[in-house]
Length: 459
Image (cartoon, rainbow, N blue to C red; front, side):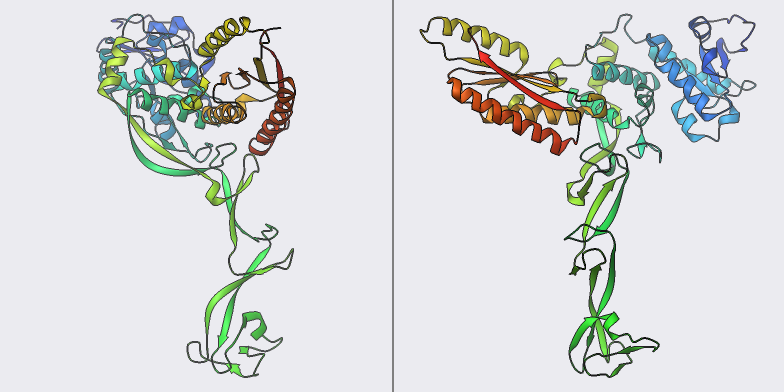
């Protein structure tokens, strides 16, 4: 830690007990020479947006010493709980004793990190490593924060700075990876019901007509008249320019509920299709992507608090990497005949050697390509489900000895050990139709198009 601070011409620097604090007002003021010349930063921006921009700029830096830098907000911003939660607290330049103690605690943990931490080949692994370092140096848990502007109604401090606006659902894939890795323990604090298409929590629950799905429906009570046993909607018992209720069957006036009549149930009338029904169908309309689904189709998702396990703390101090097998976007690898791409290539080479010894080679190799799929619009979990579903559909048309693999989410390969040209042509047509149907029905992506090609393994 710096024991003395350079006084810069454009930036104020304060020193407390050997800990130097720089003051930053906007992200244009951030440069590595200034950031690295002080031990901690005090953010004194004019707006929340500008302050969040400063935090984001620092957290996205490349080196751990920089992106883990202790950050505090000026007392002028202390009422903004969002900013306080994204930093290490409040620091008054005129009273820095507590902030200096906090900064020293962070550096005590920061000094335990390896000089050369392990690099991660996958973006989720990289973020998991940075988040684990952050929680370790702060010795705190990750608390989801309610946010009415967030796509999930919650955001996760520190992680939120690595995604575009409304990208909170992408945080979940990083956190789930931490669970699988054994680095995180979790405690469920809330449950959300998300749109199955775009994973947004912003949706409107509506009572609809079960016949035409219109929301233009009206509910009214059913009235049961005791003396004549007549049952009808309450509107049938009402007369124009007369008060009270009158039975349309026996013409008697209904005076006392419980004595003359009761209301055993209710009934709905649809103003669009004029359907009459007793049970409305409740459906969800997603505000983000406008998908409309029955409420039972919403995806239940846990929102959790996370803390580092002993294994996670040891991984941070040792610079451990994420297990590569947990990063594969292919949950379907557990299915028989679905293999990693590297394994698939080995199997193809083996089959080529086998086919060369035959007089009439019968093996075919196929490729499935999904053009126009905008992956940035889909969460990692949705990409995993798509990859698994495509592999399973392809495998369902193959023989037990045939194999399938995927290379990313847009490219899939399969090998048929024994097949005829006519059967292969039929399979190509069926696969093209069914996979396009899968994309259009589940993703509603008008730009995506599936192309299937097949050719003999040995030409």
